[in-house]
Amino acid sequence: MTSKNKIPKKPRDEAVNIMLSELKGMTWTFILCNTVVLLGCSVYSIVAVSFDWRMLTGLTLGNLAALANFYALGAKSARIIREKDAKRAKKYATSNYFIRYFTAFAVFGFFTYFNIINPVVAVIPLFYTKIHYTIKAIKNTK
Image 1 (cartoon, rainbow, N blue to C red):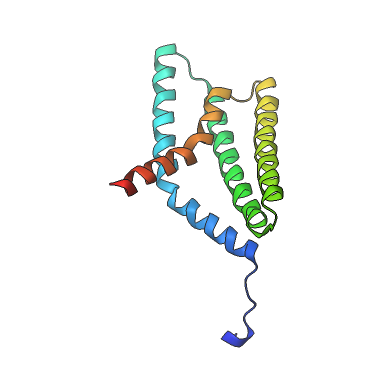
Image 2 (image 1 turned 180 degrees about the vertical axis):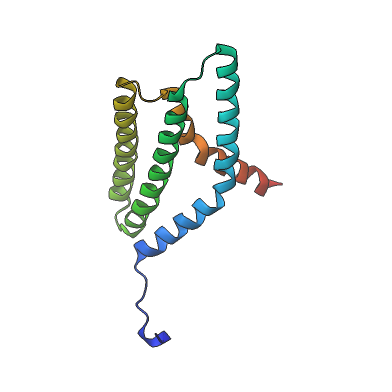
């Protein structure tokens, strides 16, 4: 395909590309945070003298929720940026935030009700992106 025939990217495609690039940059933060949480779960298992498989399922579900949350944020950001009216953009962003976290709460509640996950361990990965950007901001200020 020649450069003349290339289809221009839509704004959403660009936002998704930026989001995927950010996710690649967060890989080591996710790995490090998961290692710390797994070590904490291992120590807890040794002290409690019992292995609780719900910690692993909770950590897995929490990581999937964190990735889905970040993906949804990136996908919806394109619409927020394209919005001309600042009030509507703010309202859309706020409602989207509550929808994302309510959905995560409902999913975690469902799996907790059926005793499939440990909810404390499941919620921890939702903070990984905040940890990543805090560390990134600290590095950039030095």
